[in-house]
Image (cartoon, rainbow over all chains, first blue to last red; front, side, top):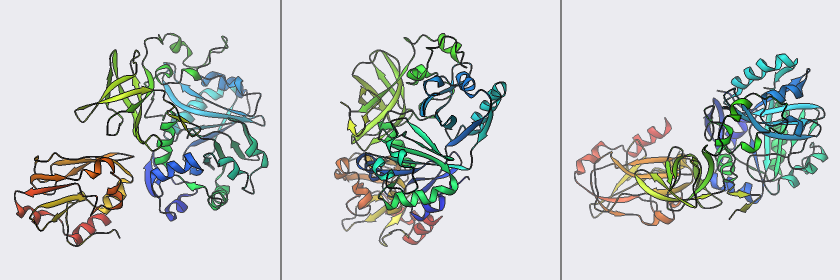
Amino acid sequence: MNKTPLHDIHVQLGAKMVNFSNWEMPISYSSLIEEHNAVRSSVGIFDVSHMAVFDFDGGDQIAFFEKIFANDIKKISKDNKAIYGALLNEQGGILDDLIIYHANDKFRLVSNCSTREQNKNWYEKHAAEFGVRVIERADMGILAIQGPDALSKVSAIEEMNDQASSLQTFGCMFDGEKLYARTGYTGEDGLELILPAKDIKHLWDQALGLGCMPIGLGARDTLRLEAGLNLYGNDMTIDNHPYESNLGWTIDMSDENRQFIGKEALLSIDQSKSQKITGVILQDKGVLRPGYEITHEQGNGVVLSGSYSPTLQSSIGLVRVDQGFKKNGKVVIRNKVLNIEFVSPRFIGQGKIHP
Amino acid sequence: MKNIPGDLKFLSSHEWARIESDGSITIGISDHAQDLLGDIVFVELPEVGQILDAESDAAIVESVKAASDVYSPISGEVKAVNSLLEDQPEIINSSPYEDGWFYKISPSDLGELENLLSPEDYSAVCED
């Protein structure tokens, strides 16, 4: 089992540890709901060092990313910014979702834990023709500091570069080997810090000393669900294309000359007929879970992610469903038919509940 | 070491049973179980009058993370359910052996109690 540089600290803090894609990770430290609420109301810190980090060296890196990444790297390649998007196979199936950071003329990529080997092989297979060397940074860890108070806490951490707390949304910067970015997976403001494993403990200790609450993967999941952010493996897999996965907005075909992997397959999809991911709120008592079947007047679908929402204090879910739904639908939970309301998948944003 | 009262009998799947002075048996889930589940947000209880077999599905308890089955430690007819749990399921976290009970059963065969675990034996299950 793999362990992050903070593993022993999580255990000392009394965290419940679980196996997450062969990494022993904290699921919660005390109460998942309290951890969730801390991020919505003040600030929390996450150890997400299980995520895969890659750097790149030499060659034509922009051309490389233009080929393998369905969003267009040119959107950020002149700025110090991050971009979110999908890695597709030739059939348009989603291999993974990821963030590419660009700052100080360097690219750094963060993708999911469970797809590490698949992605590494994919990058290496396609990097060769562009003379690019792929460097897996297993020596890096990742901390996320998230919540309305995140930036003020970060500015009080001594070894943090002062400029980190003045980054714009999706802005990023290198400080030596460390990368600071104003990104996250919670729907709140905050930073993600990708830094050498040896530097992580000191930063974590300082953040806790400043009042950041440690947050486990359990609350990370409810926070991202409320923000309507997909989880690879739950909400989309290699068998799904971006248009049925709420990722159409990350497909950039504005440059007609750009031939990215999967583009031809995407062009043959009739988007007016494909299923969509949307949000649902359970109107009755109960909890939505992955796999539950849903219906509406013109079609049906299935729950992909479902949980209790601590912010809405009712159950919410992301569903993949036929188009033509209006406001109301049904879900079957243990042979009982219950009522759901279709809503935007962005259940909350920046601390506010969307109507 | 988790809190395990000495007057209860247990299933290895973490349900407890307590014989009351009126001969009924109260059923709930253990402190260890509520700790494993984490924040409990929903409970589906049996119907009053329902006949349950020992170790059959009796209730569903859902934490934020997952749904779990609750099995009846003993056979009999359900005489009462804890309706407080419908609106305040979190009571199971704060008071698993008292306010957070699930249902009361009129036992059809008290001899079944012999099949249940003593507090000592249940404690050993929790440490595995």
